[in-house]
Image (tube, rainbow, N blue to C red; front, side, top):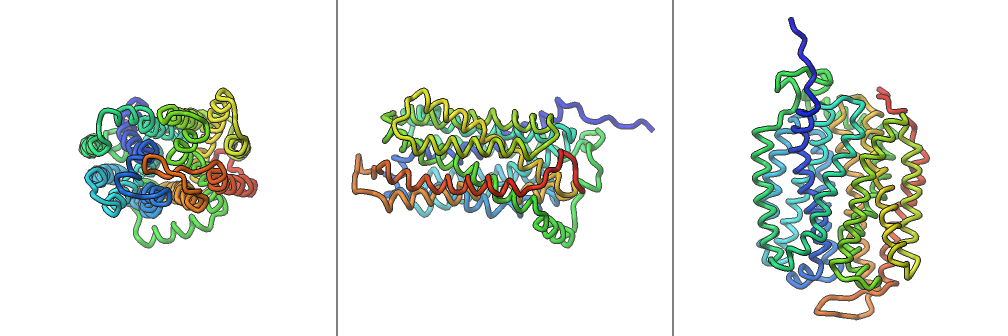
Length: 428
């Protein structure tokens, strides 16, 4: 009997790419409110706290779906998960686009967040099934890169389109794209190489579905692992800083206190995201190459914390220095991508989907809590200034709100010291 060959990497990348496109749309939806702040506050008659809450509705459902998504990825496989997620994302985006008041807008964002929540975990499952284990951290970093492309497209490009088209029409276009993507994933993506006539990268026992009892036992096993518990909290501080700044409050802050136009400010926040996108795959690859997870993660987290301190609390930075710090801070923030390989290696392969969901839940806790938290402090510190019907917040208010970001980043660095190195090898 002829032994079947492993799938070519070109096919693995093609399968993975369709899932990655869905992840791209999720990042686009995550960041889009940052360039719509005035329009959303005006159309829905909301303050900073209301805007923060509207943006965070995406994260409420996203975070809540992570553990169920991880379990579903192990039970159902990534193809069904990603196709259904893209379909619900299309419905949620359409609802957000036609919402007549803030309640319907919140519901639309809630549906979007819950549906795109399956994207990253499904993508990690595809990477686990289709690629050699030695490429896992690098492929995970490439996922972040693709996601950031979606986030950047929600920056200056979206802002330029909004100069010519209403934001509601643009969101309807995004809904149509998600619908088309749902159909493409259903017809073209397969869970495992054997479904395409190739040999599986990992054993069928590790990719087959589990019973509900095995799922519950596995979930308990995940939360008993010290590394996973720590890595549930750590990346939220890094991602929370990036997405709270670039995804909502960075544009109004830079416009108000760095004398930049909205387009220029969105360009700088997009630059932060581009640097993050480049840092993810590079630092994931470097971690694989060094054969260690912890030292590189510690270095990146330290640079992140120092960068944010300078960016947010040193006034009147020259533009060149501001740009340089945003690039350095964004690039070093890519270290958070190591979390997924770090946690996966700490548990048996059969729990790959579940542990990915747990870690990704922790990742999104950061922006979920920080975006509305910063908004609440901004309203608390507001001095009564208004412009074109929108509240204007002072430097003191922004610095008080951004201090929440720094507190979590410091906690992340402290907890990272308590993790145990895996040396890039499966520990169980």
